[in-house]
Amino acid sequence: MTETLLEVEGLKKHFPIHGGLLNREQARVYAVDGVSFTVRRGETLGIVGESGCGKSTLGKTILKLIEPTEGAIRLKGRDITRLSRREMLPHRREMQVIFQDPYASLNQRMRVQDIVAEPLGNFDTGSRAERLEKVAALFAKVGLRLEVMHRYPHEFSGGQRQRLGIARALALNPELIIADEPVSALDVSVQAQVINLMMDLQGEFDLSYLFIAHDLAVVQHISHRIGVMYLGRVVELTDKASLFRHPQHPYTEALLASVPVPDPRRRKKRTVLKGDVPSPVKPPKGCHFNTRCPYAVERCFHESPALREVAPGHWAACHLR
Amino acid sequence: MVDRTTAAATETKIQDPPWHRRLVESLGDLREALRRNPTMLFGLVVLGVMAVAAFGAPYFGLPDPMRQAPIERLRDPSAENWFGTDMYGRDLFSRVLHGGQISLMVGLSVAFLATVIGLAIGLVAGFNRRVDAIVMRFMDALMSIPAILLAIALVALWGSSVPNVILALTIPEVPRVVRLVRSVVLMLRDQVFVQAAIACGTSTARILVRHIMPNTIPPLIVQATYICAQAVIFEAYLSFVGAGTPPEVPSWGNIMAEGRRFFFQNFGMILYPGVFLAITVFAINTFGDGLRDSLDPRMQRRV
Image 1 (cartoon, helix red, strand yellow):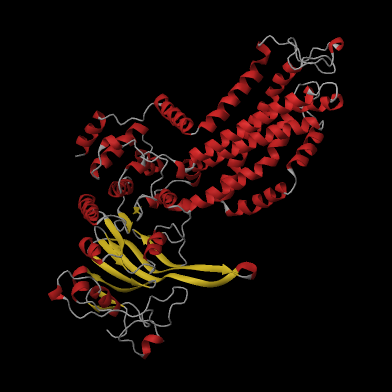
Image 2 (cartoon, one colour):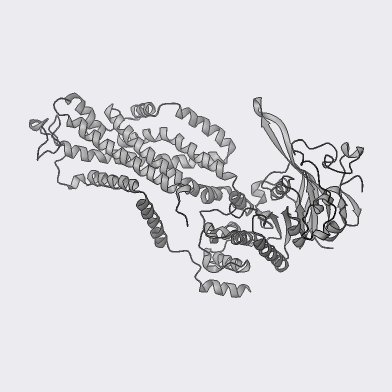
């Protein structure tokens, strides 16, 4: 039995909308609305979903960049849900992040060696020369030349910047890396390089990834297990093979059907979803998917389905399974 | 693996560039900016001439600006007294040049002090919501008092001396700097690279110093030049109404105030310090405009 590294239980993040007289709370954005899953050591859990389904908020909440509203986050068995900024510090070594936008995530006014050395400076007591040597090793590890170490970020391409982001995330030797759409801002060819680099590093350092993306092909390539999110909730969670072979939730079905197939003869009948994702400010009662579900029955409009194990290791949140 | 990369790293010299090379680099940037922006160069040159004239005045062999010679009073310009003499027979040219010392000193000191104090307050206010609410209301209150009235009141309270004038002119300028810094901090606080810094364990103090502060410097430098120009005018104003530098010290405001009564005998007592004041302020503003243009990221040279 492999060890559980990260455990998320009933996590909610609601953003209040203030306004009107006295600045009272007018409404709430239900960005993340009761999400539970675990990430095991050495595993990649992919999280897919349309834009606006709360997957990035989920990542930021786990990182404690924003405070969770409800629920629990346990990292290596220790509850970090309510820890303050200062109390979080020791746990930051174990959990690092790669951001989506490689342009915005690097400070333009710092040399790249200082950007990568920053986490080391926060925890390491080693001398500056020692830190720079570690940075050099990291540069080699992520495939960047050492001559570029004292350049500035604007002199790098998108793919190289993302390598810098990975080097920074690796600096503290973390066990878990939360990757928030790390390749969606890159060209397809560069995406493959970065994904393969991440997979190599996973093998070398026994890393776990929480890999957030909207691109099914990318997630399929890197993940061991995949969670599908819709409007702040995980609707299906299972290993890669059974998700693609036997999707259990109607939303997953539609998501898989929407992937373009590059062969006209293999094009099958698609279930194309009607309408738009409802606003997370006013999610529908009952099952969040009921407004667009082709199979919705009466019950779906009253009662929200819990995530149940419909087959061994295969979890889905649908009344009809 | 690690051994090999470390060895490679030592070979390719992974040290920081030495400080003098970095200095040369930034001086090169300044030269480039001046080349592309001749008005800024003009401002800088005029300011340089002013500074040399004012601070070099004691070494030019001019008559002592304080030496009184009642017999030579209110003379017209001559080869001996270029700008003529005032009502005590003091050489006006020497007085005007020496007067520049006060103006430039006050302008620079006020710009520096207001920027540093405003930066510190603005950084904290931008990052801490509770401090923000209190500090900003106080700053709003301070801004509601006309700057010159506040300065006059403060000098009246503390007595007239150059340090008091500097302080009295600094206080009304601080809120403007605080607002500017705070707005930059608020904008940067939610940037991804700040979140990345939080995620990799950087403390709030370090985030402020390493990530936020460097980004506030360019707009601050520009603001500082405007504060400097403003302070030069206000110092003259304070001296003119008698709430500035002590009357025996030559300053442009003092000379003009004295010249008021002898307007018809020696018009130069108003004219020359006034022209010097106008040229100085104009030069500072031109330099500030040039700086703003060259520090604006949209105007940066393309690589």
